[in-house]
Amino acid sequence: MYSPPRTTPLPVSLPSPAAPPADPPGERFELPPRPASVAAARELVRHRLTGWGVPRDLVDTARLIVSELVTNALLHTASERIVCRVERRGRQLRIEVADQGPGLDPRVPPTGPSDPDAEGGRGLLLLDAMATRWGVISPHQGAGCTVWAEIAP
Image (cartoon, rainbow, N blue to C red; front, side):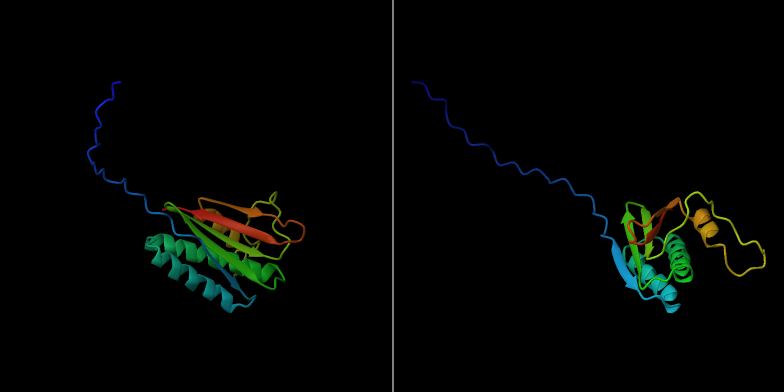
């Protein structure tokens, strides 16, 4: 009987392909329904995004968006808590603010205040101008409303 000669494979060390850096996980935080929560949300978003190495202009835009969304939750709902989430997906950021309110009517486009000298009423117009995309996840069985926005450099 013939047996083929035994050969030992040469040890070859191939470099491992470098894994792409994983996006950091999202950050979630809850806030009480108080005016001071608007500033707290801005600061938490600034701190987290700066730690992730997000460019300053994108951090500033994210802070303004979270400020508007938390303000809307405070002014237009009787929520017991406001839940914010920020997530990085590649170069894009997603911001979500959830409250216990009934949500926005998706059939009504954002409009400004009827009085041009009014101090408020421009939040959704600002959101529309700053975000790449935004939308509303309507309440499901009374579970509350989430307004989200995506921004990119």
